[in-house]
Image 1: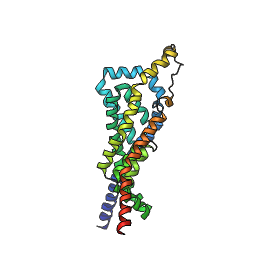
Image 2: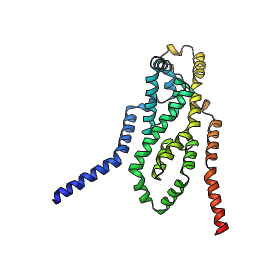
Image 3: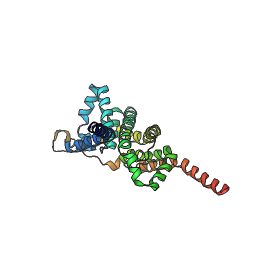
Image 4: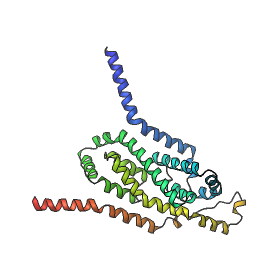
Length: 265
């Protein structure tokens, strides 16, 4: 009877472990597989320029399937925290136009962020906060009080890695609903800005081909793009400004709390 009880306990522990860690381990395994296969070498503007005609042909011949494939690829890239989200957003704008490309990108990025958020919260959330102590718990409580505003700030300001912003709220046990809404709203301006950049790349490509007319027939010729010419300091500054605005509500709330404490304390 004791052996049977021990076996049941062991099976239960294995089940709990798998339920807790399997999603995150699967995402990590997919990311490692992608790096070993060299997928990141294709996530460049140069590769996009070189394959522009072929990709356009796919879109023309199989628009719905290509759009669905793009959305699934973007969701997977975000879920496994694979580098190249900006490239994919630009590619979506180039291939599908800024409106359709931007909308599909927002939805796909939100889905991917939701997947990694749930996986990280399941595997890491409670255990890391328990080990971090009371200070981390107080910080987490402060974050949760105005989680939506803080999350919106983190999404709007492109100074923080997207994968990190996906994981941090999970460690603080932020609710999934506000996380998804803040992600959807927060990435909207930046995504459409990058999609607009992508939709205008055809003119940049045409200008480069005009300056290198024999490049299409020369396999040794490589067209390149200066990312600084499409992602400007003004664009980054606009995102930062929007992020600062998103912090106004929690700052005002903290100010009112302090004023009331001084008044009635």
